[in-house]
Amino acid sequence: MRLSRFYLPTLKETPGDAQIASHRFMLRAGMIRQQAAGIYAWLPLGLRVLRKIEAIVREEQERAGAVELLMPTIQPASLWQESGRFEAYGPEMLRIEDRHGRDMLYGPTNEEMITEIVRTAVRSYKQLPLMLYHIQWKFRDEVRPRFGVMRGREFLMKDTYSFDLSPEAARKSYLKMFVAYLRTFERMGVRAVPVRADPGPIGGDLSHEFVLLTENGESEVFLHEGLADLPAPPADTDFDSDLEPLFEERTALYARTDEMHDEALWAEVPEEARVTLRGIEVGHIFYFGTKYSEPMNARVQDADGKDTPLEMGSYGIGVSRLVGALIEAHSDEDGPRWPIPVAPFHCGIVNLKAGNAETDAACEALCAALEAQGVEVLYDDTGDRAGEKFARMDLIGLPFAVTVGPRGLKEGKVEVKTRSTGEKAEMAPDAAAAHIAEAVRAALMVR
Figure 1: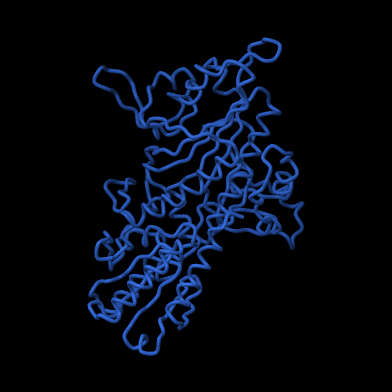
Figure 2: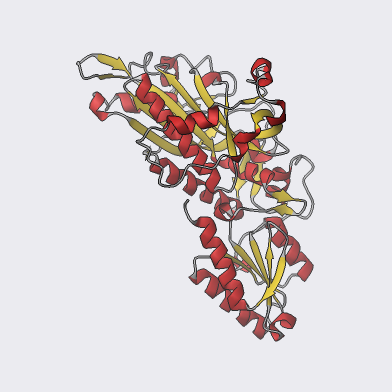
């Protein structure tokens, strides 16, 4: 992609209301633009990151056995009245009325709607277990939307819902999502620690948040140091096997946020193993049994012909929130440092003398060589000054930047900068293409 044909409206100055790194850099790098309080348009660069995150989430959900569908953003209030949550949910719910006077709402979550969808077609235990998911925009009318996409009013969520015959079977579904989440975040280049959590208005008595550890986190996290170093489950994990040992390994050690912190339990952790950090919630999973199936009469016949309410769970990932969280975890004073799997482009090419036949030809050849090996390239072919080009590449945070100039080409060299480390190296153009392509292939390999 040529930068001269791309839409990248960067800002030199930081807007005054941008208080945290992710908000500052997403605005300055031309990833988003605010349209109203807590509501943002996703511009091309930001949308590319959003789609990369979506793709990883989707792959891991389907690996765990979930099937995708898509539910509407606007829901009839009657479903929420049936479950008893319409009045209980609170002012965060945006309540509206259509032209016929029917009460509607902009969905903050989808437990009621998915229960209605399943109860109309699933009538027998032979149709279970079932896991359905979608990736859809939500709206919650935050009192004080702030921190950009980290606490906006409109946001993109992945929601999975599980349906089982018994509490024991429902727990197996819960463990499948627990493992899928560990893999999902690992593939994005971050470690999200599962911590015991308050289920809040969703309900239930088994719930975990997945917290990305970072200096600017919204919650204080208390954990045993061993939890931060456990490897993610491998790609060949058998989701139909016994996942209890893997779950126990990650929940037997102490891990709580400030909301769930228990001083007595914390005292049992050896002092030398105690770690207190800040974290950002990026995922939340719940098992809530028959909280929705009972009032909404979602039942199936068991093997003995008895009507039994469905056992349910729900599992959310904040897809748009993750864009901000990843920046909080991977950035410096100049901009984001995107992990390769979620980077908007893998490599930027900077032509120091656009319009020069030699540098133009070298850049075109390098672009072709990289793209032929699956590397996504943003080619800065503009006539801007060199300093502007370098600052822009740092601001958008691409994993690699290759600088091509007349002086270097005379020696048969280009400069390759690795954004995550700041290291620079001179090498021949073909060697640069091979080096970058190998790094990208290794990072994208599903492990």
